[in-house]
Picture 1 (cartoon, one colour):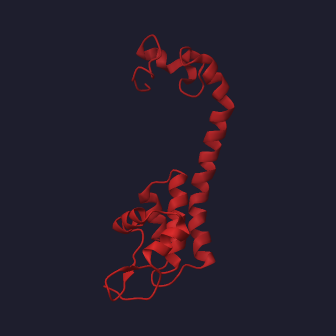
Picture 2 (cartoon, one colour):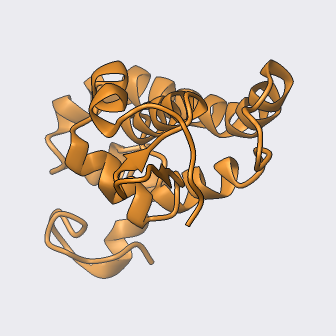
Picture 3 (cartoon, one colour):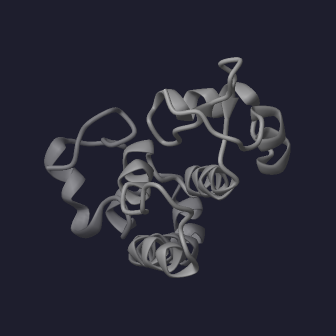
Length: 150
């Protein structure tokens, strides 16, 4: 058990906007590694505020804890990450974020057609049923009835 000077879990919670229980959860998941003071209380390095803030933002963007943990594993142990360390980590997420943006843009641009068809005329749906592949499964809104794409 490493002993260290740092900041309390309450301070980290205030700075990150996370609940104390969420911070403990991320600790149990191995995403942060606080030390302990002489009384056995959790003590966080100031750099943990950035790590936890990153976790919070990445989760809001839909990244899994496994993806977030893998990214955080690229950061150095034993010292606070530098701006260059964070830039390298962010670069790994950039391609995935760009792909998500492209997918959401395509959905947005085609959504009016989906609302218009009400998923009852799937032969015209270029998102869920290009070239009317669902007709191979039978009549009706096959995907809405639980069928999987052929």
